[in-house]
Image (cartoon, rainbow, N blue to C red):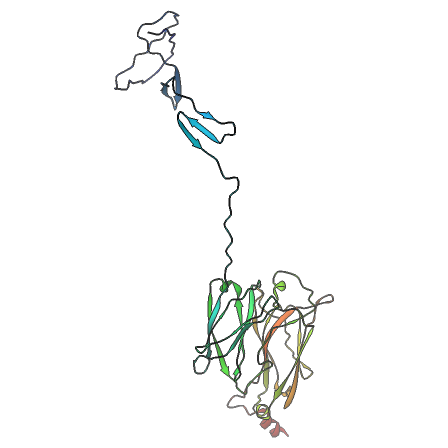
Length: 332
């Protein structure tokens, strides 16, 4: 028996390991008590008495000075952590644009059609369709939207707006080209993007132009045949794809200014189809001149915008409407 001083106030609901009650006694005496249970430490957790019967010979956990190693008895754990954590490499997302070019009248694939995304940002993205009319492009542009053109001799060129976000998902498009008709005059056989303005612009949308400015005026000539003039109605139209329009930019045909201004394009910075009607009587057999001018939008700042695939639409007369030349003769 070991000598011990046993003191206790109250310990409730204590059970021995076999379920029998444990009897506790308290005393203030300094004299040895026979058959007393010596309790070295008591921990109280959630109002339950926990008795710690630690082995005096068991080694207490030791931690090294640099805290990199913990030793518990004969068990040693190495807790060295890496001094640097490697970040995952960023994987470049390939932008994939593919599709097929077809004849709009027959639905047959068009071989050798030129599909291009005209830009001053790095290399020009262009390709030609194969025998089955298919094409694949992998452009790398930072713009939110770009203009795509498709052309081939014998067909009227076509232009469309393409959201770059779609390229990251692998966009597939069908482009349909119409065989050349007398009622449409294309100013360019292989359309390119034209940026008009003074290169003084700001904002996220306006900073996403495909090309550098070529000046404030775009001029081009086109031919009108006798047969086309004979088939004219009262109204013709200028059609094109445009982005970034903010001012009342003007269009003239042979010196006649169109009443409708070139001033409205999608606000999200995409290319939109613009149709500007005008008096077909302004057109002449032979050579004609079209001028598109960037106007001042604020102070001395000219509007910066882009256009592509400018065409003259010669609207044929309705069946019950006489041709302009016939009408003119009837009035002479």
